[in-house]
Length: 478
Image (tube, rainbow, N blue to C red):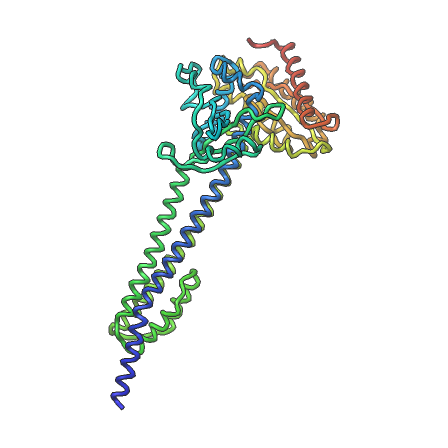
């Protein structure tokens, strides 16, 4: 009878040893798979969101580039390049755009074409490190040169030449790092392709942040996995009787998919309420400590998820900043263009254009910092009068307002009010010139025009009539 009991125990012990060999493998494989899935999904989710945000920013930048170019003058730009005042003005504007978008790595305008199966590009505009009024001979000779098109555009040259949609892709090089390249085609009035406006966004910093975050996440998961495996091996290697078998059975049913699972594991161990002063008691207390740590590590993982959400929100805010003028904090030209494009010919609205008077005298006499404050003062008055309508800075000292609702109903009164306030401030000779804000204002009503373009043109004509009257009355600074 005793022999049979011994044989039964040996069989149970042998069975226990068999589980001890399989459990470490199963736990290790499960955690490694979970780690690989979490890391892979997290990385590609962040990468995709980042690329989409930069693609939208690149679309806005190339739109502004194309607006500054005359598609009919591409050959003229190549032939005259830096000797042309118009070309130099465009170059200067492009450098300002590049300064407003710090993540823009390269900005250029190329004419792409194919010679047989080989793609080439002719250089029309290619920005260097900084703008200069006196380019060197190498820069002058660079315009009009050709080069072999590299990736990511080389393999998509047919798409770039045959489609009106922009082409974008990511590429990595040892020289430039991780870039998003974006090219938008430019067509002349006859619908012929003449060139492409291109920007390369440097995503090295954000890409590096993503890699660092993934490394930290891997470290946390590996650390948690290591702790769990170490304690599991310790338990499985220790030969004990019923209390330890009870613990082993409990541990075998643990799950680690969520923070709630970890809390449930801890609760199950505490419910065993094993009280012992030998090794079993020590092991039991160690398991309790380990499960408490697992709750902590899983909480750290959830906080890491919150960090991802915060970064997503920061990337989203970049899109909002791209539509706001950094100096006056009103909408910029891109925002104005977007809202105008959303208007329909049967919509009822008004357009107000304002251009600051006497700004050149302020800049020449008191400096450009005073000129910037002068522009802000004119803008603040415009925003105060048209308090219920969006205001946009569409040029250096040019502003636009889209009137709807209350401001549209009071448009005539508001126009008289802002002209009267500008006149009163200008006529106050006691104040210093940099605070005597003055602006010429013109307004147009969509109900008297056929299109939004015609409404803007009418407002512009009326504004220049007001400016002409100001100059006739007060003289023109030369």
